[in-house]
Image 1 (tube, rainbow, N blue to C red):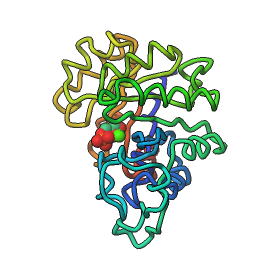
Image 2 (cartoon, rainbow, N blue to C red):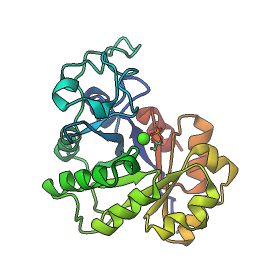
Image 3 (cartoon, rainbow, N blue to C red):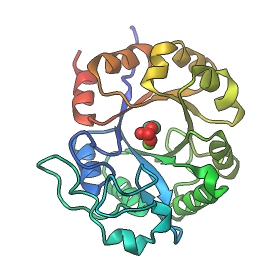
Image 4 (cartoon, protein in one colour):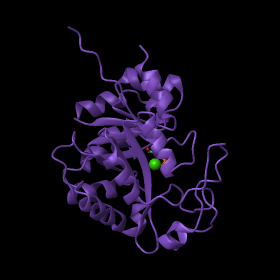
Length: 259
Ligand code: G3P
Ligand code: CA
């Protein structure tokens, strides 16, 4: 009997951010309703040491405030609206999303959804982002999963140093080294720092589709971002990519499940 290849798992990039404001609770709840296998978020540190889910260094694009995330306390971010900037008719006012709230959403969900947490600019803080992150994960019992397959959290970074620090402090946590260059990802950096998966962009995968097989030969999974176009979704499926991050989890899942 021939084996049916497993479809790529669908990760909601910043939540269902194609339809609702990114990094809001509403966008993540929508992604879960659409059947996402995983949720992706970026984390940054506030000036008083809290981890909040936001992509940009500044809050201007996605909130009613201005300035750097790192210059605001959690209290001052909590006074702002992170939802109404979005053009969608369904967008509603939303508070800043803390990593704690997102973790609780994932743990309360009945399916074993994984949370892919990307540390943004961790080098600037000399390891503080990772140590805060690991402290948070430990509080929820998530830093020492029984196996990589059973882990509810995956830590990701463009910084090899950040991945290396996470592997050293929490060797059981799965990790993804993100990057644009196939030679960097497939040629040893991911292996050197002990990342359990390589994370090329879809652009990099188009240039070097052999990356998936090279990663697999080295015992690494592949996580590809950000994959919204039907032809790109099919390419990832045909190459055997393990995880794809998309802004449209519902329609991506439907496309992958249509035979
Ligand atoms: O999932 C990885 C991807 O999110 C990296 O790019 O800029 O969207 O954080 P960015
Ligand atoms: Ca990200």
